[in-house]
Image 1 (spheres, rainbow, N blue to C red):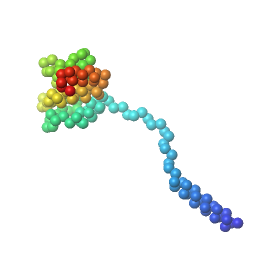
Image 2: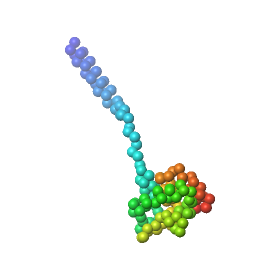
Image 3: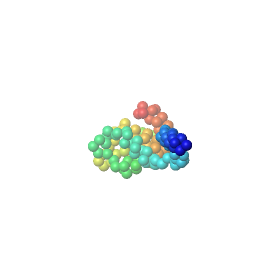
Image 4: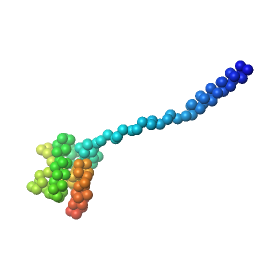
Length: 137
């Protein structure tokens, strides 16, 4: 009788071991927390990095210098000013340039669009429509 009990116990233990090996761990049922928020400044800088502005190949703005622009551009667009107004030095004085760096106009236009997407997305359609009307986008 002991042989049967021992054999049965060994078979049962073996089956349990095999069953346990074939099971996958249960998925983590904890609710995932909210996704980390990314600030408009972080979105803008990441987009600018991806845009690879050729004008800045040798010398470009610091992040702080660059971040001076988006809010000012958005404010100007919210007031109804055009992209041309913003980028014309004698009108808007918001052309992206510094003491030792500058930006080609087509790249400045790219920056305006990136800034609206990150800082004032409700104005992006207005700005891109304005740029399309002038043939610059």
